Image 1 (cartoon, rainbow, N blue to C red):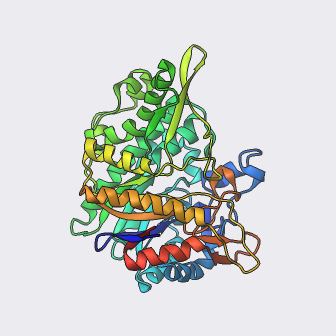
Image 2: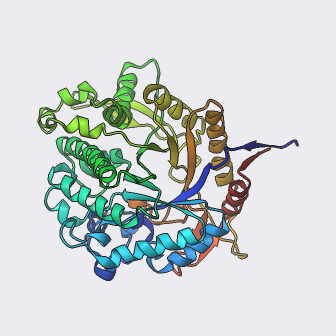
Image 3: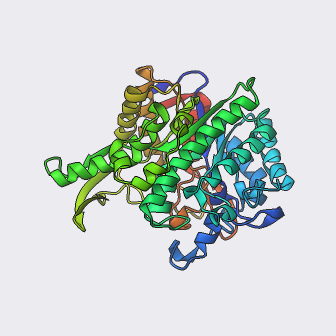
Length: 452
């Protein structure tokens, strides 16, 4: 069997990603207060097996070991989120010096290992005190977020070259405020649209404030969206075609049109007069504040059918007939190529990073403390091959982050879905590098992708 290698550009960023609530644990340590996920996880039936993120990977205590493991598997950049309730426990008011110190030590240790820190400011863990004041459905959160962003930026900007304002605002808005299956568990269409608007508005306001606070800052600020190509289940069925278009409007056009063109899809605005009233003069200009890179989180495509409910066609995701992942997701690496090409053609971002990509498998630890996760290697390899084909078209893709560095608390799925390059025994917090982690080290260190 012949083999070859695909060479990546010099300086291409090889990284792995996590989020604070999914790995840190220590929910009340050193002054931290509740986030909306701490509260949501206590609701009966909200999370698989009634599990919570109270312990997660206990990264709050094991972070030094985790950085050693990053170095061991060749991670060149680490994307992590800062827990807002660790920094400003009530969302506004007093800044918690202990929280800043935790992340300061983490960042220093990363730099000592020549690992680039990539900070996400908001990865879903809104301080509960702000939720009690209306959360993202209220304009009151805007000033609080910008202040929090500036506290972090001014404290760490000398050491952190990449900043992401929000991770996946569509999931926060639709899952958290429209369908109620994520924190804060609200089911209200108008609130979900307002939440999406305020997330985008706070992004633009934060980018503007951060850049104005230090015009000499040489790093980059962006946002991470979960994007995927959308297909009707039956391309000849009117209901499925309409439903697929609606899904695409909500998950793609709503966010990209506002960020790059300063407008929302008119169909969505017209259908919600209360939402339209919530868009104030100057909002869209702020949302359109220029930013430096677009993060794309991609896992699989969406196949959508239209279902008639109460006289209205509702978009519904079709179950995958041959799931590759324990998340019941399809193996569809060409979708990454399709969505990046679509984004590039329509919006021409200055720079694109794949800020999340990975697969959950039924990983088993052997008696030799090894994990044979060849399917994860196959998955990552196929998506990196797609990225290489995009680079050949001179699309400015500058980095790739595996989701995830560690097996972690996977939101409503609790601890049953394992995405990590590193296996975590959640009872003992012992870590074991998987076969995929050792394979990723070879790719990162050589800057080449082996193809067989």
